[in-house]
Length: 98
Image 1 (spheres, rainbow, N blue to C red):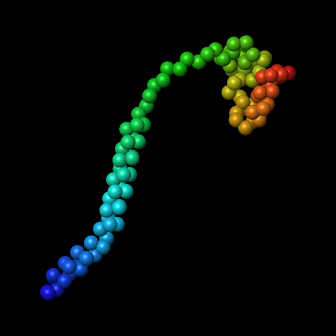
Image 2: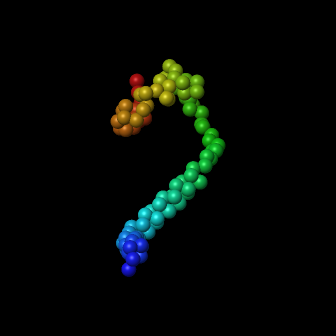
Image 3: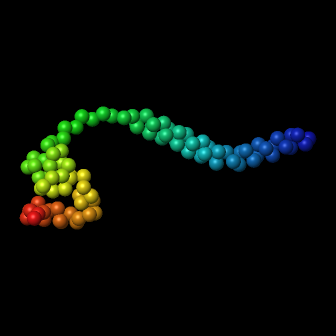
């Protein structure tokens, strides 16, 4: 066997040994490509028509719920999650605030 034939044979043996790893890499890369393309196609924007009820039905929170004599604005930090325990809101609804 000449030197060139021996080098080609060695190259083929090394490629055959790495073939399973290369196949797995190709499958993973192809799967990632499919997932990325699907997420790009699904992320289109959607417009939704929402009707908001009148927030200040009793006039306590002021015009457009911006605050007034009956309480702070509805976007006030006092209403942020974690400011009061859930039970505090339940109690206020049952007993009122004063």
